[in-house]
Image (cartoon, rainbow, N blue to C red; front, side):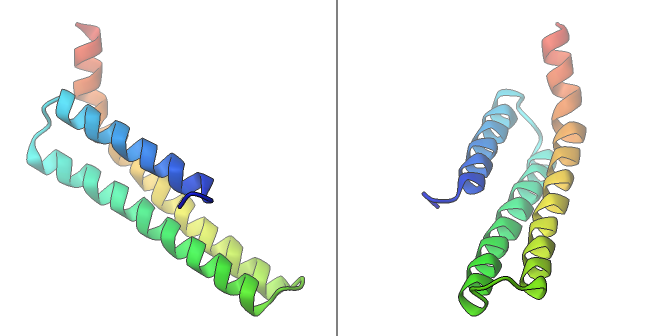
Length: 102
């Protein structure tokens, strides 16, 4: 994980989400949605890293198929990240807005 910038970003994001969930005193069901989003991003990022390393090992030179495999794996992380942002907006948005508005 030390060499993976995106993994560090996801870890920091997960900590921020956890702190917000505690600070906003979210219900357990809301926390479960947030947890599902965080786990989705982590799982896809781990799989992406595994696929990238495996492709690099199996195909050290330039290869269109290797590029497609890596791009597809990265696309999965993007989809999971969009899901996480959507969940964050739906779950954290209203109580955060209420807290900030006064």
